[in-house]
Image (cartoon, rainbow, N blue to C red; front, side, top):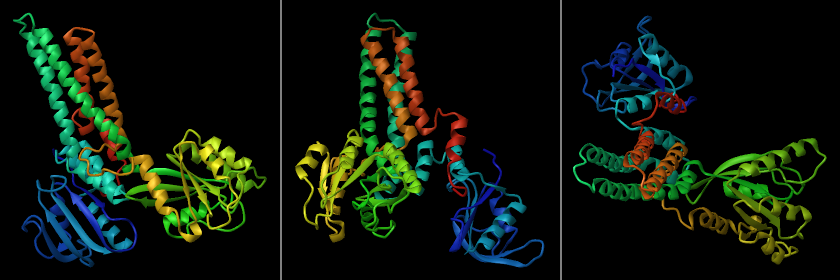
Length: 458
């Protein structure tokens, strides 16, 4: 595939020790060689690193002192010639190098174009390409582990094996339709098709059963901290984040807006949202915060409802219980270091089957029990991140659900003794849906959309 040479800054914009300008394409080595003073890059070995200086071809003045990596096709990420210029991490320096690369014939890369080229050139499939972005965005070791396994091709291999099972079944049907010498051919074919589709169906069911955990490891758990004003919501957030992100005072209504922060809880990213205390108020600013809190509650995967051990339950507390009764919620009874004034039996009755954790944030008690409760709620107490076939990508999950539905239609048709060629349509459609996961049957417009979400230099 003959593509032009692209260039982009591959490190975060800002001051740093080093920055990297990456080029990929047939002319990548030649372009850098025109501004590099050192060894002749056109003659050096592949996968070698070279010290030198960048010289402005027009003014002949030195621009930067650099290290240049030369990697020749096809043994590169994009399967094209790739050059990486390592320079000092100043904004002016790295932008000047990029500008010179473009002046000498490169084109500014589109977002995700390096990874897109790796896909188009057959270096990786679509699910592996998406895993690159998951790896970049991973916020915990376990999320990173899931992305690494997908990048390594574990999911791809499973999907390709399932597709092979289906295509062999379709081929068997085609042969029997074309050569119907025996009376019992159709019945035998239906039995084989039912057996094969059932095996694939069970594998997809298993993948989808693990999908919730995979999605949580990838995207985190959106967690809303709610409760009456001054029950300790901001203190809870600060305790989990382990720094003072939220202002803590004895004055009700201190938190006027929604505060967000990511925190790692046993390898799972929690997107903590400290909400303004939900109450009736005449304060205009606080009222806006309360409305935002209600919206956050609707979008939350997990709700932490905080109560005060040192105060009796109020009507407002009971309204909050009613508000979250159909959600995944953990009840936190805070301030157990103070005298007990709350009716714990009433709390248990209102909580029903939801977990209750007693804690004293001021004495740093109860955080471990909260983490255990979260693990039990979402992972039955443990996280099996070593599973080789986690599905965490929303696009993959939707395609698997559609594939499961078409297989269900196929098996229903078999049991209803429908003609074999009609059954084959559903099996073939399942094969196509699974192909969209790895990019074998995906449309160009979807490919463009997926890679546009990547950062510029990746």
